[in-house]
Length: 213
Image (cartoon, rainbow, N blue to C red; front, side, top):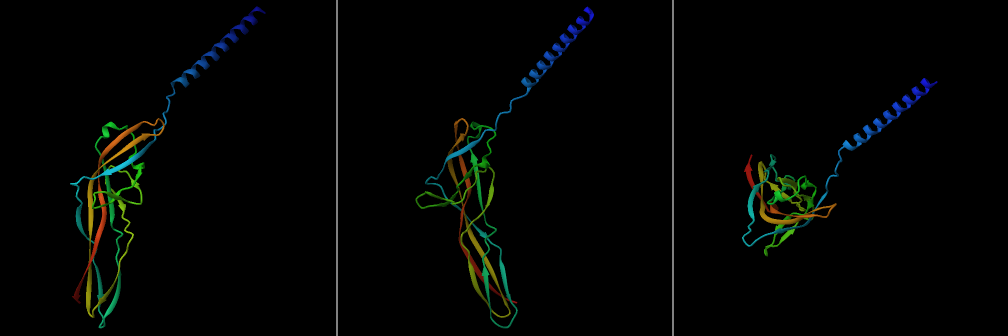
């Protein structure tokens, strides 16, 4: 009888010890799991562009694709020509001068901003009505002209008309300042640098040249 009681006592003791060891192991496992910090979210505030009295617009004349209208017949031909400006792009790049003072891991392309589009005579800037990504590499955005041009061309008999078009690209480099805010804590960081890109296209010009067939 004593042997049976001793056996049960030893069995229960072993079972209790195993339970304690199991609970300790689970507790240690939980303690060893690394905590995952939530990804920080940032916002760009109060973006401002600045030009000085010495700021100048860099203009470049671009040759657009030529179009040829043929008339192999013996009578005057009237043709309609619509200009295609779909190949035009607006370039934009933000160069940050104090990047070393800003937090790591900021995804600048998530910031959507208005870009300069016109430098006015009083050195003020007019901005795009659409927003574009704040990119630190050169971005090429579809250029929204808002205008189109349709020409009616008279092509003489047995001749061709070559339609040559040019347009003026206006580029600029100006300084900017803004504030980056960490959304959770509200902590802010000043950011500054230079914006370089295309303001606008202007002075679309069309030249017609007649050539015999």
